[in-house]
View 1 (cartoon, helix red, strand yellow):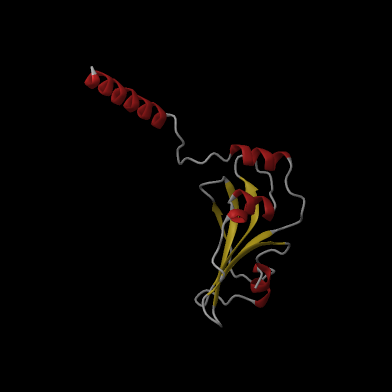
View 2: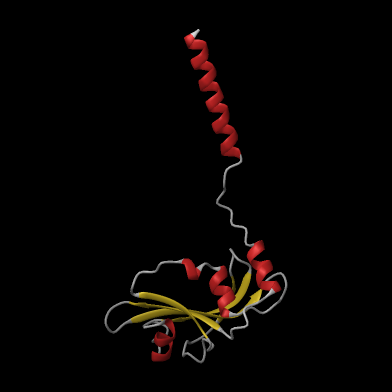
Length: 149
């Protein structure tokens, strides 16, 4: 009698775990709600770029800048704040020598060389990306300031 109850309990628990695992959370990201809210009310704050600068040592800096944001499926322009929030930059905790902020200036006006059009795979934004580092071109003081250093 005891073994029948134990076997029944084990089978019930196993079925419960299998059922819960099929309906559990997945790692797939769904940004449709976030994109819908951006399309409904884009941030009118005038931000044009997102700047991320890393201090390598006391005199060396490397950075990346994003601007010219367009939501892929709609062609609607988005602000730097919309892009920053959609890529969860606002929620990331960066090390103290890495700062990321929105800016009201374009990447070119901050002194970033180049500019390559890219598409983010996770959140459906088209944007231009610029880099500064000792190999491509040094990070300007205005770019370093825009990141918050």
